[in-house]
Image (tube, rainbow, N blue to C red):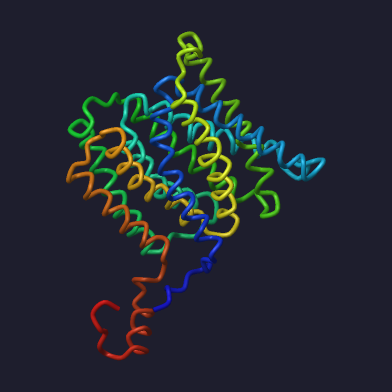
Amino acid sequence: MSLPATSTRLSVGMLAAFAAIYFFWGTTYLAIAVAIRDIPPLISGSMRFVLAAFVMYVWLRWRDAKPLANVDLKMAALAGVLLSGIGNGFVVWAQQGIPSGIAALTVAAMPVIVLLLDWAFFSKRAPTGQALLGTAVALIGVVTIVTHTRSISGEAHPLYVVALLLATVGWSFGTLIQKRVVQPGAVLSFTCAQMFFGGLFQLFLSVVDGEWAHFDPSAVTWSSLGAVAYLVVFGSILGLNCYLWLLTKVAAPKVATYALVNPVVALLLGAAILGEPLTSLVIMATVLVLVGVGLVVFQGVLNPSRLRSFVSRRGPAIAPGE
């Protein structure tokens, strides 16, 4: 049986890019938890994005004498502050007091914010009923987890929860701004520029937060450095480029569904490697987010006319398992 038709057909490349941000960004929560054991969160974040931007710039400069010539640096700076700066920086900072899986579940509310902001300020197109249903189902799982945070992870300082919520709003605005200003041929250059500005913003925040006063470089372990290197390559260079490329091809609310799948990956890795609790409540939430993302990505599944058309083509009886 073929997949339901969507407004934009998902090519093999698009599916691969979705798989990359679904999996690699799910593992970044674990990598962040390992990195901030020895490196203060905002310092580790600034290292991640500045290094990733430098590596990308060297590669782009090797291919083109003026790799950033077609990039609107003001918009790249704005997107960088919102995405790599606030969106990532506040999540990393909050993981000082919230387990990686719970952080991922909280950020899973982001697709709902993208839907609403896109409707109100950007495309002006109301989301479909199926998209609203899918995000609502996933959000129920997120809210269930957040309201039971104390029973799952002990004390969670309200300031960390507020930081996570601000991160989702910043990332959502940054996502929609990027989708509007980036052309398909400038994805790599724009990503490079926005990562650099986002890294600088996290560096600024690290000074404001006083992280450098208690940072001892000699105490940094190889595991933390390895985690930062993983974040540079898979979280930033690969993940962000796939994300921005998808934004030039697919509706932003669909791309934002990565935040609904990442918690599943993060929770399983957190339980397996960091010993974070995996309760029946958490399992229920993962089921809800998976159902929700399926409804958002595969539009038309619940469209009555499509169902009637499918049944009429196949006949009145549908064999089990089809």
